[in-house]
Length: 296
Image (cartoon, rainbow, N blue to C red; front, side, top):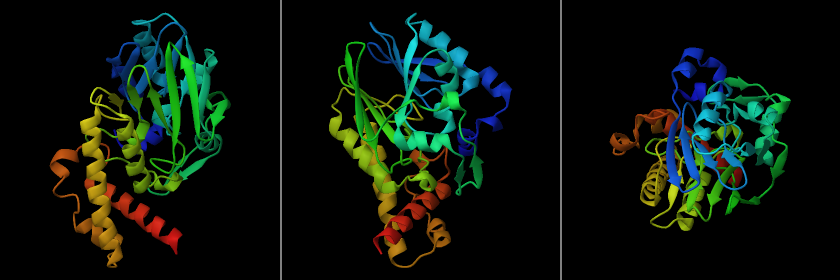
């Protein structure tokens, strides 16, 4: 699936949704990762009700609910959005209409409330309908004592977007990272809505500090992960960021830096995901030069 389809679900033909089968992965007792079409979903289930992280697309709600019902008959009462992009919030309205409360960082709420324009793709993203907009917001962190666990939600500033949330299921030893983590592939950095390569690296490092050898990490895209894979992802981002920064410093243009192929040694391991290497390098250039402009 292209990034455009991630951000504009209306571009996805219905037959693609019809063909989707929801995969259920056990991250820990009482915590699931659901894989369908779009961003990975996290599920906490137990004595209270279902705490859900991200909702994918509205066309998949019935399939998602059927997957949840294989483990629990309790309703979805809380939904946490990791950020504002359509492949993570497209089912919000369906769940709120079924009684769930939607929670997100205040910047994600703000972006869902009005039209957005993504210059990197020359794409307008319309505001979400009222029923899909979060009703509970937070500025920094928020915690939920739910299903016998402490679910800590942390703001990751200026990473994938300006309103990213990381979810730490403490007892389960599971951390969900939204699109700050694309496992096994080059990530999309939404510079137009506040994302930055430095923020992406910072959140990876912050999560690594919370991980041990048994921690399971739920990425925004890609398979269920762990500390060592997240470390490799962080190291890849640092390596490319550092080369691009050097080339910017000696006056190379965006086109020249892309042509220099700074990811060449990494492509065998990281190419083949949402972004091709040239697009990824272009986003890092945009991020590095935006940061440099702010320092002037």
